[in-house]
Length: 506
Ligand code: XMP
Image (cartoon, rainbow, N blue to C red; front, side):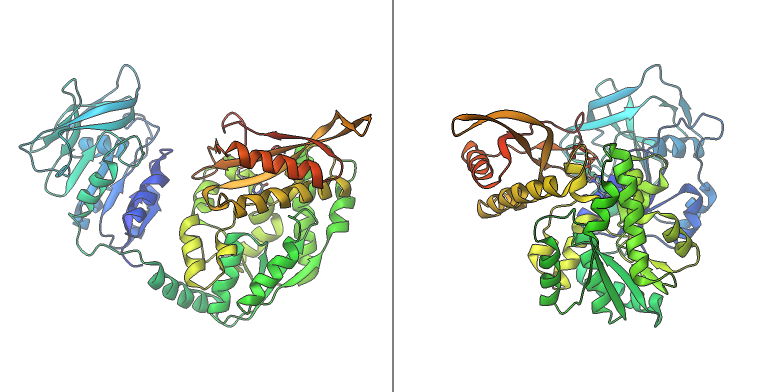
């Protein structure tokens, strides 16, 4: 993709969503830092994002305005981006007394030609800012106001537009139309078509690999599966390694091998279950458990492939790239063991890591998997945590507990598939509650385990809602687990949203 729509990141929590929305409109878009403006090449359009700082602060993020002007393409400033542009054009911005956060109304100025054509006269928008535009430069027109008559949308000339609100968040009801109208000002919009993207990607991978031998760690998850399929399509000499930690779903190892077999991809399985269980014995601290698994995973992997890997392929996605650039994000910590461990960082520094999926979002990866011919059973899979069932087994992980979780989980997932719920859910699984509760068995009191069942919907795993499964299905899940899984006498359904809960219990 040669001329993506460049989104310049001034640090707003919503910036990634702008890219996402543009891709949903069918165009290719990428995120750049303000200092990378020249590296955008010749984009079809530029969007300056919002940001948490004030343009009035010393050292606030800036843009090379002369260069931006010289690019001759449509530019849209959003929130911080609008205030920055207003100052660059010679106008002024003043500190607001309070932060305006939440819903507001956009009243369109009908007589000015703007990026609001086809919109309702009054449209709900989402605001999140404190500074306001206090003086307009000469030649600038107001294209929209809020209910108090304050300008919330500006036009400095035929190609430079600004909006004080966020078109990318779903609370802005006509946000997608606004973005589309803005993009209509651009020439040669880069269409994002997964088919042609696949062909480009195959070429790119071939060139990048350049005849070297590639090692690819597959987990059975969507990202690494699509990566393996892409390497296969590119006819690259690849060893696909599947580390069985013993913390996977029931039968997962065999299923992965057979599903890949269907499309002609060979997988080498390393059964390291014993090593993992031994290393985890006696450990109850969640962070320590993660660390043990992470360390061992890399150890087992490099034991198998040797230290002199020519090229390592990783299924890092676009959100991972962006999130790990934001230090301290949860996402960057949870991924630690997979993508960022020392050995891998060394390989990366030596130019021996390729991450061909690093421009794609999850659903684009799924689509790519489909055009590469992967079975729906692979591309439609729910996300599964790297440390596996260990995060669904609070307290010490033992072989017995893992078996109970696997058995209950298998029943649960089967029912979701049979009842047509699996594809409507972002992620589902069961957790073993680390406490024995009383029950009756025959005439006696028994103390056995309790299982918590969880199903959530989510867009990005940062927030989640619990799924309102019908009572009959919950009843069926409970009956079958209680009858078929030895050692369980109680089943609960988790009705916690994230936040404040998380998806996994740890
Ligand atoms: P939480 O529990 O934080 O999970 O709400 C958010 C998403 O991340 C997955 N998850 C992990 N994925 N390594 C991973 O690759 C991990 O250590 C890890 N911990 C949680 C979780 O399953 C959910 O999809």
